[in-house]
Image 1 (cartoon, chains in turn purple, yellow):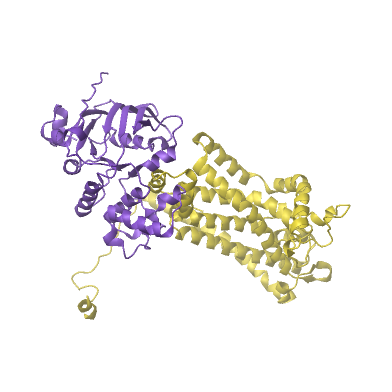
Image 2: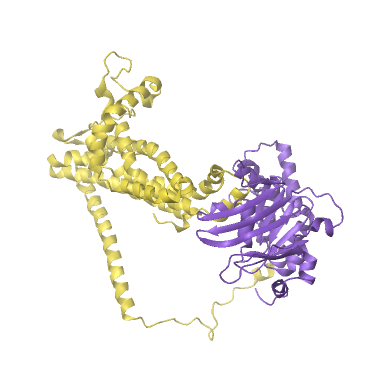
Length: 279
Length: 340
């Protein structure tokens, strides 16, 4: 099998106006993954700089969700899962022998495909659930301020400010997803991973979440998996195209600025995919 | 909205638009199997109902002979034909509650370990081992309790009595824990020891229900907690236990139902005593099932009815407890898919 190393482009330096993003730099190097003996990712390298929304696109089964779950050590919660390579968070390997799995996950938050608020907790309790789970103590006034701040940033505050004690499960799907985003933000992560966050939502809710992503971009490094080409074009600045050709594990075919990927793809397969000719 | 409320209700169906009868011609195998399944189901109901009726019918001669005293007095002296089940019922509940006190934490922690912490290769073995506990005959538990547990439990009982004896339920009349010679007999054959042994027999039931419910705790919520940086304990506290609450309560009540009826082990361990007392560490108590096992051999006809009437009371108690367990498990979010 031949592996073509994807060209590395420094998006942050090349295209974007100078800003001062506060997220962390996430850097995956030669990441492979297996389920049992079935290899699903083959030596994938990808740099995800702060201030940039990175979209992972590709057809189903190409390994992009697996790759995303490797980025915050959720992959290993599947019993037969294995992996190789390194994931560096601001230069430190999150899989290093001395690394702390719970601290890593706290720094690299995740929003899932299906909204998953804790149904037994109220909206407010859901927002600060991460603090409780990680044993972080916080004063009353501070807690209220944090709840408001996170719900603001998640774009949900206006809709729920009068019913913070209602159960999290009483919200609509789109609201639940924004609640999950707010909950992820409350532990103050450096990176936010999103696994098809809008695939279960209606267009209006999708738009709200995309707006939220645009606002959060400078605060946390965002990596988003999406099946929706238009969404990738709208929300991301960098794009990585994953593909698993018949019988082979997933690889990155092409990575580059979203503009280039959609307008001037280098690889024919990228061109076919972004133009809807397969996938 | 108000306009629609004020309108007279429309007739349910217009004459040219009525729901039609839906019929189908059934296939022979389907008919045959349905017939068999129905018959077997009916037999089970009839047998259970018949047992209930048979036991309930014994209430008539019992009440005719002993009147309301059957429930309100605590002596059981067949020679004087003086029978009452007050202490019997209390003792039954006492032993069952002591059994729960031991079995509840053990069953809960075992279920949590199996579903949350055990590596997958160990899980199957543990499940089999716990299920095997249910398969051990109760006479074995009885002997195990009598010969192995009781001699050691004596010292636990004395310890509790020594340091907590000022609380009435830890008192032991006639037993001085600090005496030069240990009055062993005052601490043995007690409700405490019987409950300890019964607890071993009911762990598998509670554990099986709890484990089933914990395994259904939604993956999405578990992952949400993990992705926030939670420990496994955090997942248990925030996802598994809130989700499994119905199963925990239901499984415990199911175990209670089983503990109420345990016979042989209790029969072997306790020394029959009909005094109404709440001193589980002290020698002697009686439960409904062990009462029947103890006395049915020498009973006259009407005394036999009285024993069976006591059995009827136990039957009703167990039925009520199990029904509540089923209701709680089925009503909770967690139990929607669980069979108990």
